[in-house]
Image: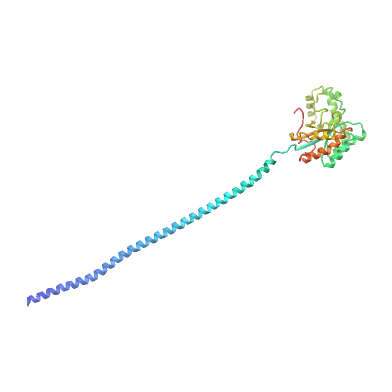
Length: 314
């Protein structure tokens, strides 16, 4: 009895233990499972966050790459436009270069001075009429005339805007170049004569009879030049001659040829012609001479302080 009681009590204890263990197991197992699930969920959340971060990073990288691509495309487009613009500019410049190359060398002569020695004469009015018809001015290196009918032309030449210069009082070489004093006297006499005929005009331009390189003078023309400078007088020679004073008389065609031939060698041209009563061919050639120089774009001018000094010994 007692033994049976003991066995039963032992079984009860064991059963209780089993029940306790079972209960503990039932309690601990879900707990353990929850812990495992929690840990797993935490891991999954971490992995998910990493994936999300990676996704966001990829998107950011993609966006960055897209922006870089856009910038590169924009830069490339700008470069293309710049190249196109430069190409167009080069094409325009290449088209301009031939035109500039054609106009770069300045055409000579730039200026032309029509000069007439020995007047006034019976042809002075003819010459003045032709100059007026073409709207140009001339340069008259005059002598003293005793013909009262011609003396009015000193004043008319000035009034019409032409240059009135000095040539000689007597135009006799042996007298003019006999000595330095004789030369000075001749210049002063023609200057005074012109002043009397023009109400006090003081001429400042002079042409040596025969030019500053003539071989007729028995005196030093260098000394004559120095004296002219002291008097405030500038002398002018010529670099183109119409050769209308040679003997026999030149034809109109020859004078036109002589007055225009070789002019392109000079920046400024001073043409020697003569205003004398027997120079019909000079008057006849004058319109053609004017038309020629106007046709090549040369400016027909009067001698002034800005003119190039055409002097044979310079």
